Amino acid sequence: MFKNNKVKNIIGSVTILVLSICIFPLITSFTNSSTSINHLPEPPKPKGKIIVLDAGHGGRDPGAVGKLSREKDIALAIALKLGKKIESEIPGTTVIYTRKTDFYPNLYERPALANKHHADLFVSIHLNAGGSSTRRVKNKKGKWVTQKVANSSARGTETFVLGYNNMDNQDVAIRENSSILLEENHQDNYGGFDPKDPSSYIVFKVLKRKYRDQSIRLAKLMQEEYVRAGRPNRGIKEGPFAVLKTAGMPAVLTEVGFISNSEEEKFLMSSKGQETIVNSLFNAIKKF
Image (tube, rainbow, N blue to C red; front, side):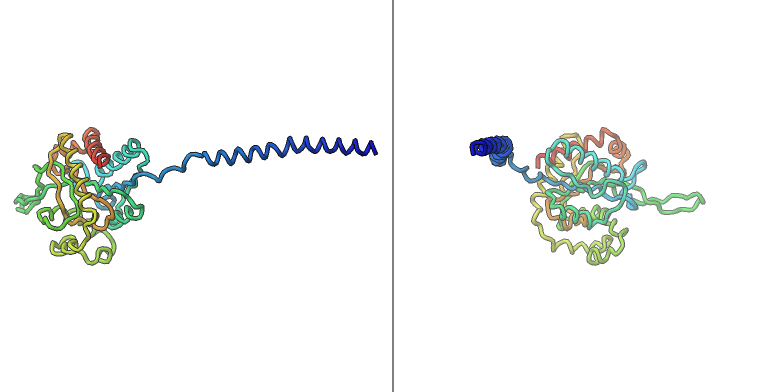
């Protein structure tokens, strides 16, 4: 009997010891875990602003062509440098590109991408070209022919918002919208809109102006930054641009210089020139 009680006592002591070693730490761990959960850092805040950068033209569409360069190439270089600067210097900002290589996204797909990602801004980057005049010259066979000559004197920067009242800028809109003609089924994609027909621009008058004021503010900031950098200011303008048509956020199309002007073309091709443009756009976006 005694021996049995002794054995039972020993077994009981061992059982308590095992419980102390195995169970109590688990309880303590659970308690500590519960406490730590209550003091976990707050979940990350929603991601910051989303900016869509659209390098104009691309692929089979070179855009305006200068003596040494093409609009699509310079616009892409500026867009990529601007995006890199935004992401590195404005923490939490996401940059989405309509293109990062030399290909052509349809015009309607560019704002659609911004809408899909609920972007806060849409910036389309382009290079301008002066109008052309005609002159009579002799060709290699000695015959007189009519030749188009680009206006090489135009220079400076201008930024557009979607608009339909000031038709003085229709030539710029027609040139930028002409990319539509490179797209398959363009008549279906744009409801029969013909970028070559000025009368068809009436379609833009039915569009909502929900983001117009904000777009104008962004355009104003861009032009102010261009001026600070010493760039000629051609002002803020409005035009019926297809690439801005369906953007569900503040959206602008900025012409960073004239590729038809030899002096400006070299500036826009240079690292210094592109850095000047990138800094101007970055400062404007950051202020906005």
